[in-house]
Image 1 (tube, rainbow, N blue to C red):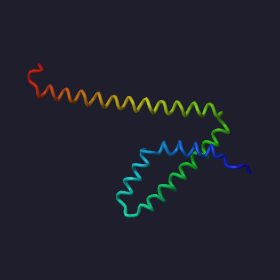
Image 2 (image 1 turned 60 degrees about the vertical axis):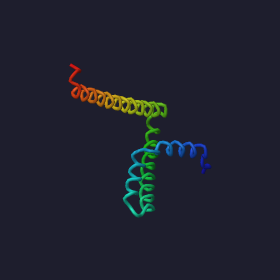
Image 3 (image 1 turned 120 degrees about the vertical axis):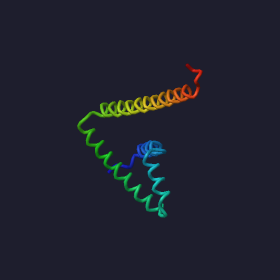
Image 4 (image 1 turned 90 degrees about the vertical axis):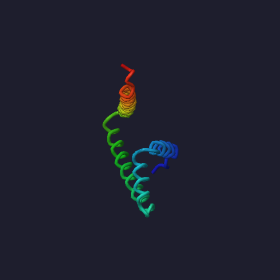
Length: 115
């Protein structure tokens, strides 16, 4: 049995910790905890859920890497995150444009001299 690779453990911890800050999971936990008088139970339930989700991800990653080359998996993950990022930016830009158009239309409706 080999020793626990501390560098891998540390980099995984930091990556997951930073990725989880402010995401939907954390917001859900804050919401549930805010409506509960038992924050310890909320912590235990959310911790178990994250552990199970991480176990499934690690198992799936290990299985996939046995069939698909690591470089291909990294490329697929990178492209997936890039696509998600571009779509979020597009959606954000679309919402800003729609709100600007709505504000301009509202201002024009209020100002009869705009004709």
